[in-house]
Length: 371
Image: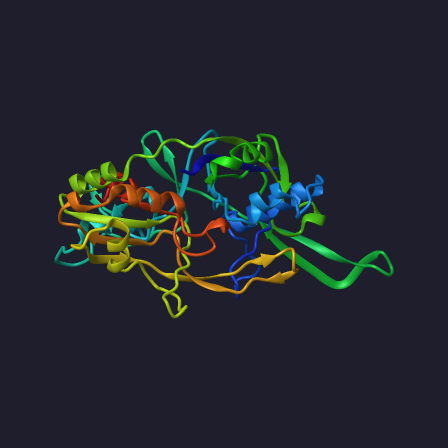
C-alpha cells in the first residue's frame, strides 16, 4: 500500500519553465511544474547537501521507482486546495469563458439537435455564444470548483561579453516566467518504507530551484505544506454518484496527467481501449461510448548526462474516456483502486500516468449555468 502526501510549493522568485516546442509567438513558459522537473530539482538539492548518488537513500528517492512524483498544478488558494487540469469534456462560453459557467458534454451524449450554446442570462437576454472546450486548470472551493488564473511575465536581459565584462552588443534576449508568489499543489505517492525519508526531504520551509535561468535569480521555490493526502472517495461510491447524476450506466477514466502507453510492438497508444479496462476491472461487458482526448509530445532533460531525453507521444492531461458498464456487480473494485493508486503506463515517477476513475468533476458540472 502506497503512502500519499499532499504537497504545496510557492514561488519565491519568477520561474522559467520550458515552453511549448516550436512556439511562434515569442518566449513562452509552461504553466505547471512537471513531476520530472520536481524530481530533478529535489535530487539536485539533496546532492548539494552532500548525499551521494551512490547512496541507498538517493537510489530509493530517485532511481528505483519507489516515489511517484506529481505534476504540480497552479492553484489560487493557500492551504490544501487541490488543482486539476481542465477536463476535455467541459464546455464553456467562447467569449466569456468560465465566467458564464460550464457544462459537461458527458451528460449530453446521444442528444440530438444542434450543439448547445451559452444560456447565461443578461437581464433576460440569453448570451447565445457557442460553447468551446476548456483549457487550463481548476481548483477546489467550498462551493465546488473554480478556474485557476495563471499569468506570465516577460523579462528582458542583455548578454555579457566575457572578455570585456560589459554588455554584448546586439545580444538582447527575453525570458518568459511565472511570477513570484504563484502556488502549486499535487499529491505525491511513495513506498511506506521510505515515507520518513520523504517527509524529511520535503518538510515545510525547504527551498530548492526549478526551471532555467537560475544564475539570473530565477527558479527558487519553497515547500509550504507537506501532509498526508486526504482519503479519496472509494471508486465504487464515485461510480454510483456518476450513475445517479447522469441517470446512465457510464463509467469514466479521467487523465490527471499525460499518459505514455505502448502496444506490444512498442508503438504509441492513442487512447484507453475497452480491452484495457476489461483487464483492469475483471469484467467483460464493457464498451467505449465516447472520448474527449488529444495527443501531445513530451520531452525532458537528463541532468546527469546533460542530454535531452527521448521524446514520447502521450495522451494529453484532461482527456476523458467514457465507457458503459451495465452492472457494477462484476467489477473488481479493489483492482481498480490499485491501478489508480499506482498510475498507469511509462515514466510514472516523472508525473506521468495519474488517472482517476469517475472523477467528481462530472457530478459537479451539473451546478454550472449550462448544465
